[in-house]
Image (tube, rainbow, N blue to C red; front, side, top):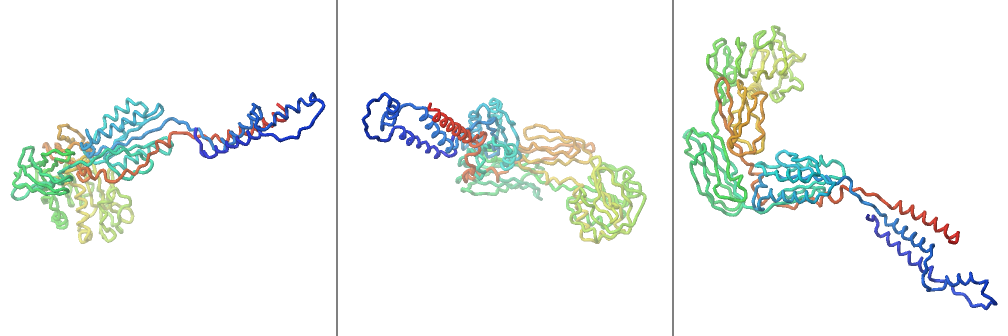
Amino acid sequence: MSFLNPWGLTAALLIVPVILLYILKQQYTDVQIPSTMLWQQVHRDLRAVRPWQRLRTHILLLLQLLAVLLFALSLARPVFVSRVGGVHYIAVVDSSARMQAVDVKPSRMEAAKRGLLDLISGMSQNDTMTIIQAGIEPYVAINQTGDKAMLRSAAQELSALNSRSDLDKALQLATAIAGDGENGAIHVFTDTGGQYGDEVKVHLFGGRGNNVAVANVSAGKQDDGVIALTSIVNYGPEVRLNIELKVDGYVYSIKEISLPEGGQENIYWTGIPEDATTIEATITEKDDLTIDNSGFAVVEEDNRISALLVTDRNVFIEKAIGLRTDIELYKTNPGEEPAGQDFLLYIYDGYTPGELPRAHMLFINPPEGSISGLASNETFVPGKVRKHANTLYEDLIQYAEPGEYQIAKSRRLNVPAGFDVLLEDANGEPLLIAGETDGRKIAVFGFSLHDSNLPMKADFPILMQSLISWMLPPSGNDLTHVYAGEALELEPLPDSEAIEVIAPSGRKYEFDAYPKPVFYDTYETGIYEVVQAAGGKTYRSYFAVSVQTGHVSNLKGSMDGQPGGGPGRTAAIGYRQEDLWTYAGLALVLLLLTEWWVYHNDI
C-alpha cells in the first residue's frame, strides 16, 4: 500500500490535543460538608478531572484516537497496488552484422544475449515475454510465453546476421504487440545509441572497436582484359594492410597498402584474364569485425540480347529499337524467319507466324483472328486516344501523351484474362494491350504505325523502349550484386521451367520458373550461381552478396550519443491501483456515530 498524499498523515498530530483534554481538568474551590456518602459519585468525577493524572483507559478516548487516525488516513489517500496478470516484456534484439564485433567479449551479440538472459531470470511467475530479432525485417523468435526454459532456448539461438538492421521497423512491431494495454514493457538490446522514446528501456552493448572494411568491389571487361576496382576504408587508427585478390577462386595478386585514420584507398587491378567470371578481394589482417573484410563482384559483361524483327521495311520500328545498345536486332521479311535460331524477343509487324515461339512478343497491327484470338476481324475508326484508367501497366505509358495521337483505323482487340488495356479511344475500345501468358510477355498494337501519327511524336521512342524493357529480362549488370539480407527477383528465361540457386556454401534452392520467383535467403556473403535450362540448353549466371559496409562497419560511430529511452515502462505498468480513501472516510463516519452512541449511553 502507498499514499497519494503522504502529507495528510500529519493530521495524526491531532491525537496530542485529544489526549491533553483527558489528562487536564478544571480547578475547583474547597467546601466543607457534613458527609461524603452522598458525594461518592461526585468524588469519582472530581478524580477523573484531576490535572496531569495518570491516563486511564477509556472507551471514548480510544474511539476518538481511532477517529483521528482514520481522518489522517483519509487525507493521505491510501492506494493499494497489485499485479494484474504480470508484465509482458517485448525484447527487441539488434541482429545487424555490427553485433558480430569482438570489441566487447566474446562479442557484442553474446553480451546482448547475456543481458536478455538476465531479464528472463528476473521475470516473476506471472510475467511473459516476446522476443523479436531485428534484421532488415523484424522476426518474432518466440511469441508471448512465460516458460523461462523456452525463452532461454530462443535467446540462445539468436545470432548476428550479415545484414544491416532496421530497428525502427522492429520497434513498430514491438509497439503493436504491446498495444494500448498497461502491462507491456519494451526492452531493446543493441549497440547503437539514439533516441528511442521514454517508453523503451535501452540496453547498450558496444565499444570503440577498430575496423577496416572492403567497401566496394567491381569489375568489367575492357579491350585488354578485365579490370577490377576495390575500395578499402579504415575506421580505426593508421594501419598497414595486405589486400588479396582472387579470380574465380584462385589467388591472383596481393598488394600492400597503408591507410591513415579514417582514410580510404581505391585499388585498381589490371591484366585479369578476359574469361574471368568472379572477383573476391580480402583483407588478410584480423580486426574487430571480420565479416566486412571481404568483398565480391561478378565480372560485368556486355550482354547483348538477340531480337528478331519481322516486317516489310518499317523504318519507324527499326529506329526506335536501334536506340538500344543491349539489343542485337535481326531483320527479316514475313514468312522468312531463320530456322534453328532462338531469340528472346520477336517483333511482328502486320504478320503472325503459324506457330508462336516460346519467347516474348510484340505485335503491331496483327492479322485478323491471329494470336490466339486477341485480334478480331473487325476494324473501327478510333476517337480521341487516352490512357486506360487504373491500368496495371501505368509505368509503361507514364510518359506517353495519347491526347495528340491520331489513328485512321484499328482492329478490334479482345482482352483475355492476364491482359490489361494501356491505351483506348474515347469509347473505351482497346488500342494497346499487354499481359502475360504461359511465361511469355505479349504486347499488341491494334493499328498499323503507317495509319497513325504516332511515329512522328516525340514520345513514341520512349513508349517503345518502355514496352521492350518490360519484355526483356534485365541485363546481367542488373543482377550482379545485392547486399546481404536483400530480396532478389529472379528472371526466368521464356522457355525455362525451373530455376536453381546455389549459395556459396553449396546449399541449393529450387524454384518454379513461373510465377517469377523471389529469392530471400541472401544472408550468406559470397558468389551465388543461378542455373536454369531453356530450349535444351543450360544457362548459368552469377550474382554477388556483400555486407552493406556503410551501415555496419563504423564500430566507433555506433555508440555515439546516449540512449534516449528512459527507465522504460516496466516499473509503471503491469499493476492495478485501487484508491482506498473512500473506505477510510466511510470508516471514520461509522466510528463517529459509534462514539456518539457510547457517550450518550454512558458506557
